[in-house]
Image (cartoon, rainbow, N blue to C red; front, top):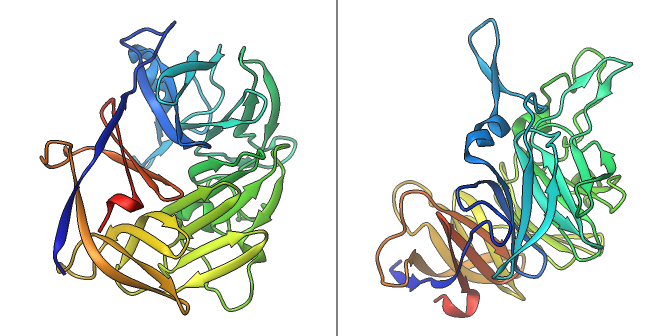
Length: 330
């Protein structure tokens, strides 16, 4: 299958914005409702503390689940210009993700969370802040968080990697409770309490071993996950699945009605990494291949991130934010 070169459109430059230090470093960024990007910034000197790791006696290193250093941060929202959403006097979660909830609230979620015997119990790795950084609520999203996406109503979809599904950091062993993310995909409400999980799916769909692709469009979630690599839609509590064998693994999904763009990895060394196609009769049928390029046609740099929301792809290279939609793809 031939590949069509698709040139991205430059959308904005992501900077700390008014009130921020231009030397600050972005420690996480995510796609928020309404096609906005939310960025968590801290000083370059303190950024490494948000990614701290500890070394066990065996020599194996593990990420710290709580912040051990005193680090302040700012959260900005880009639409595309930067607006400050919150100042956090002290981060409490390590390896953090930032997202937005209604009423100008900011949700910070740590990727790791340990479970310890009572009286300690589970670490609360979901922290809700107001614009001044005050803590409004805390919740347990569990260990192994691979990414989060919020909805206009205030729900938060959370995808997990294998350690959050099968158990680590105390979860699932020696009488401890099962991992919060054992189903692979969980939705939490505005009160930070779990209100849906993929374990409540309809019969006949395989379980998840990891969830690399998550697209939240309004209140609807689309996923593709390890083991099956099918395309799944969760809408109004109903789960619909389309099988596919065009890609060995799907990393990103852009969706619009019955048309889909899937970015992933082909079977073997042949075939394009990125495909468009249609959803029909329970299957994804690939119709065209493409590859992304910068606006001048040159290849993307070695390091870049891509996010999807509904039919739109958002690509971040350094501080440059690019966009392209399904209508632009072959």
